[in-house]
Image 1 (cartoon, one colour):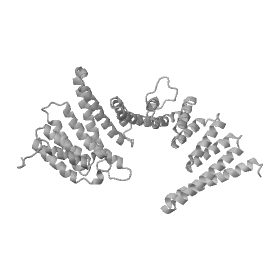
Image 2: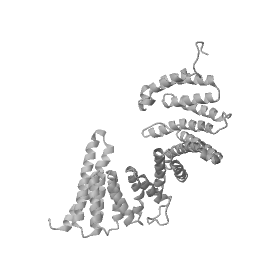
Image 3: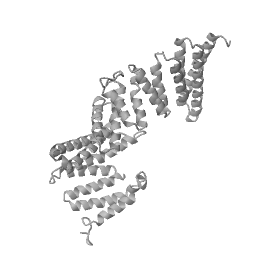
Image 4: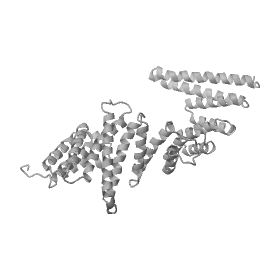
Length: 423
């Protein structure tokens, strides 16, 4: 009967529960049946979850005055719309819940879910508004602390990097006047904030090479790998930390060459060598961590990190020569060994050409011109063995014609030019 609210509510709840189970069963069939049937099962699951959500909303409307029934029904509708991929409808339900039930204990959770939904939709302004309202109105709740990292992500996505940094620091460097409930290092939010803060500083270092961003990234990454050695992100962070040490050493080298820093020359030189040594060690760890690891889906980033680690480790050793005694051939000998290892491991990769040039430099600096000439000849042979398609991903100025012209120019220089007898 249309006027019987109790019976209508029972009917809506049963339809909602049944449709939800049908949606779950359809989703289960997606992985069980042949791939050709997957679109059909996906569509069936989506339709069932949408029907379930609509019936849960009908139940909430019929039982509007009974919060013990209406609120759970609304949240079941939110879940069903989420499973159906209907993010806009999910956001609409959450907005309605927050507006109509401001006294509910679940409003802070609703604000978090609303922010996450808007963030997934790419509506960062609306997401920021929801997260900030939660932090202002409900700062002592668990749900407010959950807003900090995604709020920082929204600031990063909208290129408000200062606000992103301030937000992440609210998690890892708690201010005495902070109103938001404390987040301890054991919490996932603290872990996420620490890793993300290191990433943010690395990005800042790329944007602003003259800043102290890499030093700040080093501090955060070092803490992260000590606190969370088993975290899956640690492998990536070890590479980024090594690169941060290498790049920060380059900035110290600029200070070493600054006449105004002459009073601190010894201290700067020691710190320069320490950072390069740490970079060398960490790049070695990256290589060791992935030794013998088979390639597979999702491993492309790991493979790139290992490849770069081979070349950057050799660079870190070579760069020690910039402050070493001119008579000390140690950095060149050790760098040669690492460059040789890199070019044999990646002989069909264009990066090998840069390593060959560094090997030539090492031989020249040690006075071994004949060895440098032989290495130049090997570089010319190696260039011919690199497939054309491996150059296609590089900028135009770094492709095969550039290297052919550069190597030809080296052959013509007085140092490497030979006479008619080959001498």
